[in-house]
Length: 250
Image 1 (tube, rainbow, N blue to C red):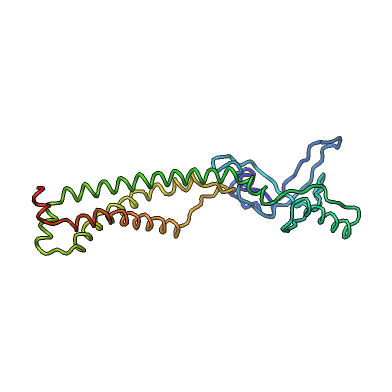
Image 2: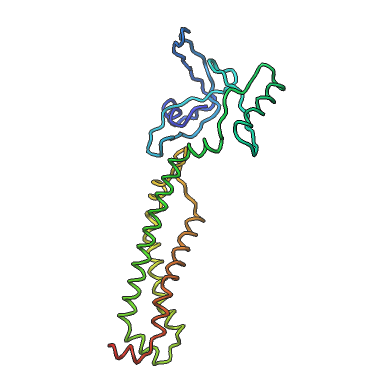
């Protein structure tokens, strides 16, 4: 198996499947240099362990079975409610009975190692989440302030509407529609930035962009709903004031 970078480097646009390539092993540990002919049976995606901006090196993947200079010790996953030391002793006894001559050499906590390996990615995700929450808070405050200013600038119009028989729900809907238009316009204007955000926030091992259309639609719909919820306070306050007070203030 070879990765996409090596396939493009050796064969450009040709199909590398069933092509032959010579693998050269340099001298190591006193052994002379030797080579072998291998046949390409598949292509894998380029991997970017350090992020999507990292360049992928040409890579060859070989089967573990029959590979030279490799001695893989068997590994076992043991589950239990006792301590790790007790599990290691129990696993050593079972291994000694089933496979005489072998013993447990070392052990580690799978969950702990998984948490450690993803610590950087989780920190990056938490940082992005904190930034998103801070931006949402600022946007909510800005939306609330703009609606309060909008209601204040339309006090005379609202008073006339109430005098003409407009119900409280009509006045509230008037303000809510204004908030819905603002939030919908903001979502539409932000659509070109979604691809950039997905590219920057992607921490996929293969460097692929993490994109989900249903999730993007759900987030956009949630932003609109939150905007409408924030506008409830100025909408209720606009419909609860007497027309005489509004006109007197004017």
